[in-house]
Image (cartoon, rainbow, N blue to C red):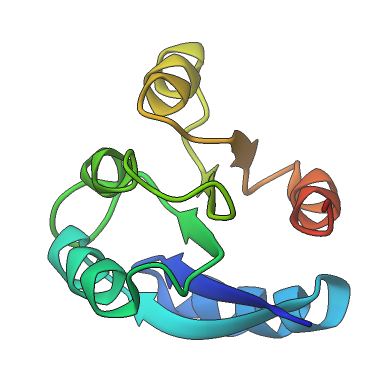
Length: 121
């Protein structure tokens, strides 16, 4: 059964390419898309315990992916959080993991690893 997934990404070009790739290469169903931290917070609240995966970009049109990570800190055991960013510095990796991200991947050269991670049980 596909993972109920939220995508937090402000780039339409990336979304338009990532969603079909996720559907084809990973067993996911993107049920919510947010371009801003506040939109992500609304979707998280509306889906409550039903979402299973959230894919978060760190730099958004409004707000930060770090804010979204903070909002996920009280998530349930079946809910996973992954950061997919163009800015995977050691500092951002550390901050993301400190805020509870399960993994962080570089959009430019770790997409294969990202898709593999999405398929992990």
